[in-house]
Length: 363
Image (cartoon, rainbow, N blue to C red; front, side):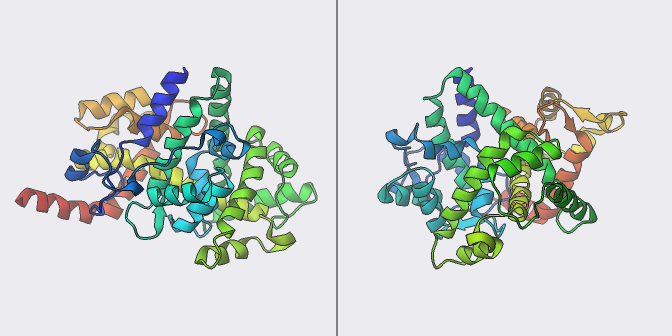
């Protein structure tokens, strides 16, 4: 079990980048040069992942990596911009992972593949999963099962923020949370603590096991982001946490969970990108499923359908879709949601993909 889980995380982390500049492509679509270059030695020191210090592999601080990478990044990116300054990653490595300054600086440089001074979620995720793989070597079978359960519970908690921001349903969800807090003598602007979040999750019938880690590490990572003195992000974080010495509130936590869910859903882009590259329309592929009274498809069924349609997608691509679209681990994906996501992906990147295809055809 430990070996299989380690291999899964290593597969999700993907190959190492060579640190060179690359064309901007839609998520999930890989350039020919990048696929050829995978596995080559790193050209620069910044492309070599900084290992987790041996003293930190079991240190309390490294436990923040028990949370999924999309939650960690959402905590560090209060503006929801999809990138964070390198200095924030350095602060995170020092405050949360226990890295000394030199190692933290190297870790931040590793994540900044473009050299632009900012770190994108995709690169941050690759790096944290690299570190997570090291930590797994120190875990027992029982600890690994507990870790899997915690991450599953955390994904399930994101359902509290499943409605698009600015919609009436989103406002209704916020009202639901506000009402639950009010019954306990709290408000959305009340600072978050573990016991209060546990009671909120109990009232909303969400997995209470995720409450304590979320409450603890959300506060620590907000402090890590705020420690980025002089950067724009410090102002954004401070604006979110004005009360009681700028401690994070239930309102800011809810906003963080919305950002985390958006990042999680972006994991499905590798599946959508593979379909676009193969010229496969998911609506057509899943048409028999969409006609069923209960239009769901298992991960195995989806993988078989994609393979039959000559869609080149590694096994982790379907696993990523399951993680993103199946928070309760039922091994059932709602086909209409898959199709809607694919259509949105095509709408965002269709023109760019057509231009790339034409250029490749001329070369």
